[in-house]
Length: 307
Image (tube, rainbow, N blue to C red; front, side, top):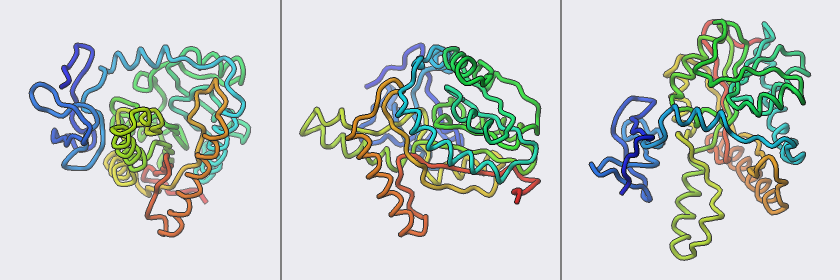
């Protein structure tokens, strides 16, 4: 049984607003019986953590988040592999030539966009990451949480969030704000952990760990504040005013920390998963998306895609 701490809060579904959480098999409960931990909304299916740190604690955590002074070259190369594909996707929406990256981290994605002729802007709460982007890459970032950063409305062709939406306390509010910042016909591009993949991994490794406790350490699942799948991210985007939602498997990047080179076993496993996920997507006519991460593109109404 979990006791709610002063630094924690209990939240309802961010998508539909319902307070109808269904506890997952390995979940806990609060003293009053409400599910605590990772839950699924009975009404809309969104997976989220019903008990989490309060927003102010989360902001302090990300502001002080550690970023290696010298990121591992293999890690950088893997991230850029993901970013290059995403940068190509931006071209369909180029009009003003302005792109905003939310949670820009080291600034590698914006560096690639700038090389392709984009006017780049980024927001990032970590002072260490902001300094790295400025001093090493010449990319200027605004140091602030996204909900405290201010930009002109209808200013950007595209706004991007790489593995961030599922870590925001209020993804619905963030997407509404992004809609205001985009010009009509502009697009939001998202990369996020695939709930289907990570919940399945969690279930399997939890079961195996009952027999072999050390197996739990091999669990690759990642569940932050939210876990989106194809259905829930589409509903979230449509509920916040976007249309023409397209979801696909995302290329993989190494899950090792930026300061440590990934081992050959992790590289082989990642490549194997990517091939299998791609095969399932192809065989199913893109209905089955089984990759660890998904990629989403959605358009703000009013302008349509650029040719």
